[in-house]
Image (cartoon, rainbow, N blue to C red):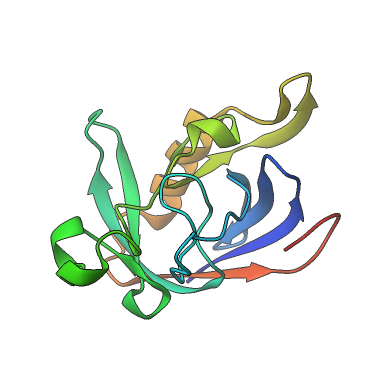
Length: 159
């Protein structure tokens, strides 16, 4: 089981710490943006996903990078778009991944991971995100039944 504890939220980014088998990696995501029609998983392509428990599966991104894809239909997050019931396709989310990303604006429908987090003139940034993904893949390796628990635990402007 992996645990992501979100510890800080700004208008541009949500930061956290991902723990897996005693290793800690830093995370970055967009801030929470409610769906205009009240969808439970936030605004598509603009928001982080809600806290909760997600199934995590190995996934090859279109770029060829190996990452992980999340799903929890109860929270409004599906693995693939065709799994979303047709009448709700504009309100629910799919293809939300864990992958390398340095800034929140690069983590569209994703949780970016890095080895360190720093404040820059462009906002919060993760350093060495490819190294973090390699470390995550090494620790998780070939585990097939993965669970990710996301917790909103506080910090400045946590939401």
